[in-house]
Length: 317
Ligand SMILES: [Zn+2]
Image (cartoon, rainbow, N blue to C red; front, side, top):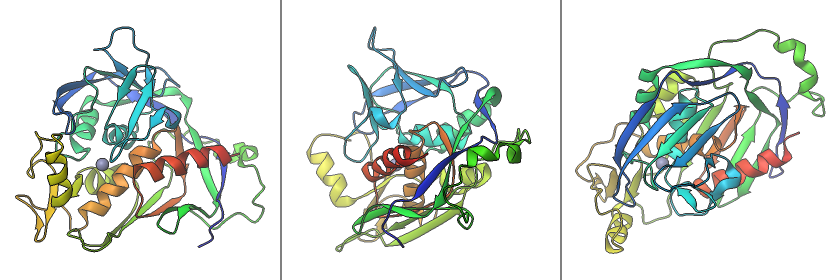
């Protein structure tokens, strides 16, 4: 694999934007803050994107779900605009993207998203039950046309074309508008393929594992959305000692001891690697575009996902 950067081009949209058919509320408590919270998801206009509104902070600004608004915070994806912050939104974003929802106003009454069962399935099922409607404008789309890598040997994401690279990599696909004249109303993710290789340094209680999926809405719903977040017993103990996450137990998230999950059962043999794909998919939703490409990650986390996305947007032409 080359260590140079990939080539990414903007291509014509193949689908129209979508939003929720009606308001839907999801409530629970934040894993980090232990606070009760209600996230209310409302339909939004074309090109609005996903925006969070801290209704508990009067006069606070909306928080667009854009990588530029992301701040560094360990083990989660957090956004800040002015005095308004919202944390742990990666699973929310994954579920919105998984449901094909591009535009959504999210009213939140606490700083952290509900953790629910540690996966994004409860959000996704709520969205699908509420229904999703097609809008007028087309969704922007990026296509990987030549492979490259973001990151370094310790943690990286390879971006690859879905198909063999075009002979002329300077070709601007925007000029191929006539090829995409069909009005494809069916929702699709583009044709992304996601892979994650999870490798822990020894000693480890979480076995090395890999997951790879070609995404369709159904694949996402069945194979990725139910995969839960996880941590080691040592990590959980440390957080407890810090006095955070004290409302979360091993039945809520996967806590790995020497003999596997404590007081819990895996939903998939490689559930952790699948969850890492869920996180990457959610973090990549911090850009209002569909992707055409393959994304193969190794040992990455939220920060590397965001760094790769920001750089990819920067070099896309
Ligand atoms: Zn996660």
